[in-house]
Length: 257
Ligand code: G3P
Ligand code: MG
Image (cartoon, rainbow, N blue to C red; front, side, top):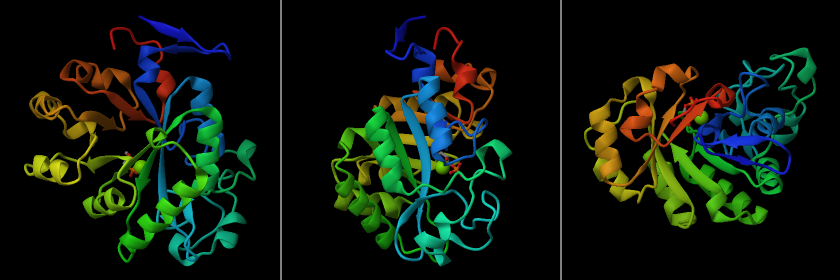
């Protein structure tokens, strides 16, 4: 297996380079926090996936659920809380006492981390019922421009094609990936419309025929969220390019990937 020895002594194997840390290394640190992103860099991952939605005062925040109930010590809807209210919450304690005080990061803080560590960021645009997609995309684009991050360090994804259409208008130079649980029949029309770079799908619904069709058109093909490498052994042969996983380290020792 080929590998690269980084300056910090971490051995980057081909296999780890073909994983994306889902919400950071979210099996070892609280998801969507800087602590989980640091572990991803330490593990040798090039890519980190995050979920983004707006606070009530229009700040893109890194959090998955539409409420803060599961992953913080607070309670309520993200979209009904200001940046200042969200920043007062503890997003680490629910996971483990050693992460007490870990805050919900903003997108801007996360972009700063990604720039400093020269990693790459998959920004999943989360759209919940009642969300204003155009506003979400406009605010995300503003933050990205303000950060000065290079376009090739970012990839947008969303289950909501409309969000990707908006991003295509706002930041055409940033790549877009369509998220589907199961890839639908009309996939190729949608992928053409958004000039997609990648397809991200639930590994449990993928088969070799669909995977080969996607690869025939040269799209990158990513699977979420296989946490046991043995479940997706065959997928590499089908042409899958990357696994979006909570446990990138589980893939580190694989050969022939
Ligand atoms: O981006 C892949 C994956 O994150 C999509 O599902 O619910 O974990 O955001 P979810
Ligand atoms: Mg996600």
